[in-house]
Structure formats: C-alpha cells, structure tokens
Amino acid sequence: MTGGALLLAVILFVLGLVGTLLPVMPGPILIYGGMLLYGILTKFSTLDTNFFLLQGMALLLLFTIDFLATAAGSRRYGGSRQAAWGAALGTLIGIFVFGPFGIILGPFLGAVTVEIIRGKPMNLAVHTGFGTLIGILGGTFLKLGIEIMMIVYFFLSI
Image 1 (spheres, rainbow, N blue to C red):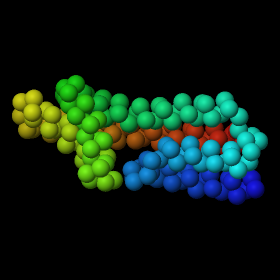
Image 2: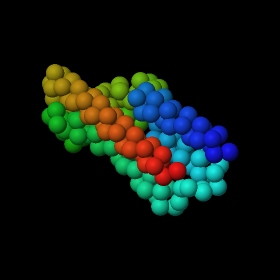
Image 3: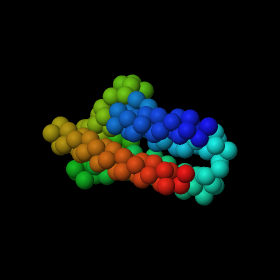
C-alpha cells in the first residue's frame, strides 16, 4: 500500500509543480493534497500532526506570495498602492474572464487600468503593468522553491 500511496503522492506533486508554472491547476493545493492523501492511505504511520501543520503554514505562505509578489512588482515599477490592489483584483477577475491566461493578463490589465483612471500617462501605466508581470514571475520562482522544499521535507519525513 505504501508504494501505491507514494506513487499517487508523486503524481500530485508533479501536477502541483506544473500547476505553479502553468496556472491551470492549483499547484500548492495539489502538493499538499498529495501529502495528505499519502498520510490517509498509510494511516499516518510516518507523518504526524506537526508535519501537516508545518506544511499547512508553507501553503499559507504560498498563497500570500501570490498577492504580495504582484503588488511588490507593481509598486517597484512606479505603481501606486491602488495599482497594486488593481493588480490583485485583476488576478481574481482575470482567472474567471481569461481562464489560465488570466493569471498574467488580469494583474497587468488591473494595474494599467487603475493607473490610467488615476490619470497617469499610458506609457507609465503600461510600465507599472510590466512591473506586475515581473513581480508575478519572481513570485512564481519563489513559490517553486518553497514547493520543492515542501516535497523534499516530505521525502525526508517518510
């Protein structure tokens, strides 16, 4: 049973990492779900409550990075606080409107729209929009690093 449980967990880990790069699937949730599924199928013989609490905190950190990286990129490239909120809101709306491409288009359009509404010239608003994209890219690499650490910790714990 342990071999089958491990195989299912690894499949979810791979899908989770792919989901972080191509946001069609909720990557961090799939990774955590793989760990939880392994725990359930093995009757939690090697993974204890502390393991899942620590991994749960890492999961919350990953969700926080999504919004903070977008906002930080916007602010770093001259965006206002409102543009950072526009980028975050654009992420949520973009996923529903544009599907998987919404994770890129939504924050960009959200930041640009807010900056234009605030009276910034188009070139500066677009500059802010590109800053949000750089923030998203940086956040994605940071998320991948944390997800890999989560997976390594899983393998060290089993």
